[in-house]
Length: 264
Length: 313
Image (cartoon, rainbow over all chains, first blue to last red; front, side, top):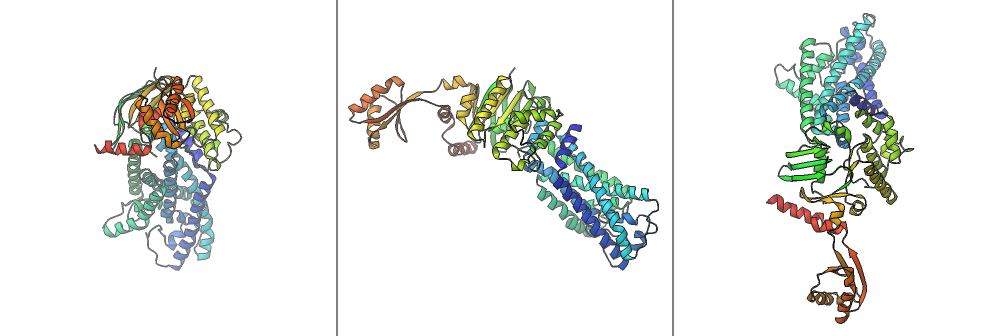
């Protein structure tokens, strides 16, 4: 298993891939902070849980965790980026035919899948850290420009930072696993990403409108996890549901990988 | 011990039977040629051996271990399947390092295989800048990483220049002489004829021939090619020779008569008696290519038509 992870890390740590991934995370962190603070200060009406964003109010931003609010606000955006890179990492093995070499060298296919998932989870920790650093760095000038107080931001800093990072990281892992499942099933990064983005931006919004109580939906659950719980879904419930989604996703991916012929 | 054995091995893809109750015993050691027209089932057989696809029914062993658990022999088998597959943006060295780490091999093994295939000095270049021939060498290097007892190479000389083909031919012979079993699937029959000890001919997923190359070549027939001074005389000469009991067929340059070298003078006299002057008389033996075509059909187009009929039945 260690060998599989080392092998995957070597292939995944391509400078262009990582720079693009981390740059997108940083860019979204920058954008979301700018928009989030100006929206809160102007008291403009924004959808509380619109597609891809979940903005807190000015009072919350002025609280002890305000410096890290951008991480949870942009959870879906970070999630889509994560889903995309996980899907690309998996689907590329099929599109290049590399999967033939990998499976003939390591016939226990579940180990290949597990090793890739672990390697991607390690890189996602780095991506989360990049997003957090950029988010916090952007929060101060954004708060200052929007007239939102930062007096309480130093309070309980380590705990606030730790929980914000952990929640953002866990939410990205769930999105990443969704990317793996889609890529394994479709064997195409373009199709997998299209389905993922389409779900986040369209399908889940439609489902929310159609269903009376839809807080268990994937996107809503992950947003609640990233935010440390919401009024609709407590943190523990969101965490439990996320684990269920991850387990179901990994079981589907493992079954498909194990049973399907390698004809690529 | 046989390197590969199969018993009633079958693989269906929907209504198409790619491998049909295949019984095969491949010896250990030496170069084994696996030949057959496109769509004959070679790739399916290789993929089943490597654990990439599972058989519909039947049994097979690789190095004495069942193909139902490829992990039992994966460490002893190296393969180049179809075109070489690598991460284009990574260097040759990093691609090989990735595979050697997957197999838990020491990193020094990468240097050894790079030297074996002649890529030392180019190993830091991104694979996307490699020519087809260099990618092919890298593919062979990847197959050699585990220092395999059984090496399976699908079209290993694809894209190589003539000097590269000779070099790889020498390398395969050397690997076999060191005690390995080298299974080579290729359409370059002259190449296979030059280096193979054993040959398996497959068509429609069935074995047409399996045995030593020398046994197959012993089936070859001698013939004499005749070229008339005036090409228009060929039909007349053909009927004259046929009436004397010779087996004659047309060729693009004249006529081909099934006969030994000693019959040359006799054929020349027969032509003269018919009032026809010959421009050339040449003796030749059937090549592996001739035998292959006789066994498997004339072309892929013929094969596709035959196959369609078989599937329809």
